[in-house]
Figure 1 (cartoon, rainbow, N blue to C red):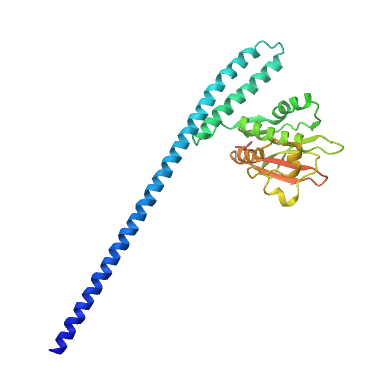
Figure 2: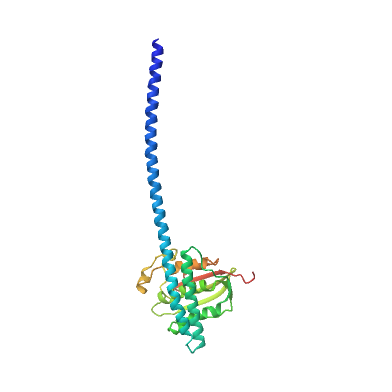
Length: 268
């Protein structure tokens, strides 16, 4: 009888412990459920904010794109009054590029790229057009035509080479300014466009981060206080989108050497 009472008491004690543990677990589940619900609501709120931000940004760029079309069209009409055919054609080309970049900015907001097919680009004439304005402004630029043709996206390549040329002219000055030298050549299955300035160059430890957003070195801030440090990053993206490579290095004789390497598709 005593043994039976002990067994009964032990069973009652185990039952009470199980009930107490079950209540504790239920309380913990309720707490966890409330925490999950709070996190869910916070996530939904963040998602809604992000969605509004994306929609606001798209509306902003759509408005900018729309508003810029009108002055671009007016400028095209006014350019018809120019007497010099070559100047008028160059003016049209620049406005067409501007129009394409406006469309590209809008498409970028919508997570798409500027639609531009690969085209055979004759580098001598292509680079010659880029140099003309700089040379008229009094800059010394040495370029020897090499008769090369590369398959590329013309507007993207123009933006990339234009950025590198602007950087070389802006930051690549030395006491006895040697100007900018541009060389085109084939090497290792690539068509290379090399742009060298005669400035102070870049410390070796900083070369790897030059293309990072908003990176500006002391020399760059002195030469152009209003720069944003975005040009080289944009240039690298434009080159890599065409299967190419942008390489930045110090030239053995001084200055910075920027090389755009694009696949040589002449046989494809």
